[in-house]
Length: 432
Image 1 (tube, one colour):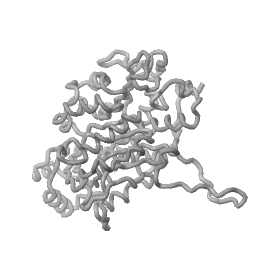
Image 2: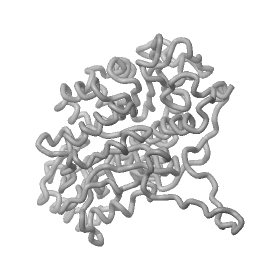
Image 3: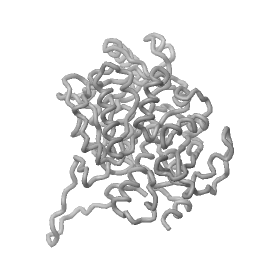
Image 4: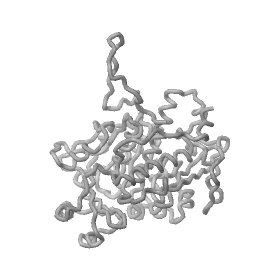
C-alpha cells in the first residue's frame, strides 16, 4: 500500500483523447488528499563536536538551547574553522514530518509558517527550499523581512544531539495567515509544542488558532512534544491544550515522563490516553509503542507473541484498528510495541529526525484511510469510523521501518521513499 498519490503517469498525450488536466503544486481542498503542518521554519546546520565544545559555549547537552544571533554566529564561525560542519538541511520537527509524508505518500502536504520575502543564494531560506520536497505546498507561507531560523545540531561522539537555536523571524507567524479552508479540507493537522517557548510571539496564537480550526472541522489533530525541558516548563499549559484540542500525541520516553511523572513507557502511555485518542511513543533502543482505542465489538486479537511488562498481555489486541475514543460504544485501550527494525543500524551517527519519521508513517496511514473512504466509501474498511487504514501492529511496523531509514542515512529527512509495503495476513481480515 502506497497511497494516496499517483502511481503511474503516461508520458504521452494521445491526440484522440481529451487533453489531461495537469497536476498543480497548490492543494485543492475539494479534490486532494493532504495533511497540513504548522512549524517554526528553520534550517539545520549539522556538525560533529566534542563535549568540550559544548562547555565552551555554555550549551546544555541533549537539550534545545535558544541563543542570540551573535552567539549563533560565533558557534558557526568556530565550526567552520574546525571544518566540523557536515551539511545544511531544512529542519523543524514538523517540516521534517510533512516532507517525509510527501516522500512516502508521493502526494501533497501544506506547510504553514514564515519564509523570507527576499531569498538570496546561500541564505537559510534558500537551503530550506532546496531541501524540501516539491510536493510540499508553500503557497500559504507568510512572508517576513528577515531570515527564518537557524538551528545548529551539535553531535557528540556518543551520538547525542544538542541544539543551538537562533530564531530569526521564524516566530512571527500571524494568526491571520492561518487558512481555515485549507485546514478544514486536510486529512490531519500536525504541529508541535515549540511555539510555547515564545509567549510573546505571534506564532503561539497562530498555533492555537490552527488547532481550533481543525477541532471545529473534525480534522484529526496531531501534536509533538518537543523536548523534556520544554514539557517540564510548560506542563500545565500543555495539558490544557492537549485535553481541549489534541487527538494524537507523539513523544519520546523522556517527554512522556515529564508529562506524566511515570518513567515506564507503558504506564505513561496509558495515563496519556485519558486525554488523547492515540499515543506514539519512541523509546530509543527499546523500540516504539503505539497505543490508542478501539471498540470492544471490533477488537482483533494478535497472532504475534503476547508481551507483558508493567501491563500484563498488553499487546493482545494490537491487530485492531485505531478509533477516536468518542466514536467507540465501549472503548478498549490497545497497546502495540515493536523492537528497532533489524536491531537498528550498525552505527548511529545522528538520531535527529527518527521520531519525525515514525510520525510521518502514522500520518500517511491516517491520510490513506481518508483517501480510501473518499474513493471507496462502501468498503468493509469503513464499516466503522476508524481513524487509520491499518492496525496498530501494522502501523508500528511501518513507522519503525521509516525511523530505521532516517537513522541509517545520517540525515533528518528521507531522500527517497521506501519499497512497497508488504501487508501481513492480519490486514487481509479487513478486506473481507
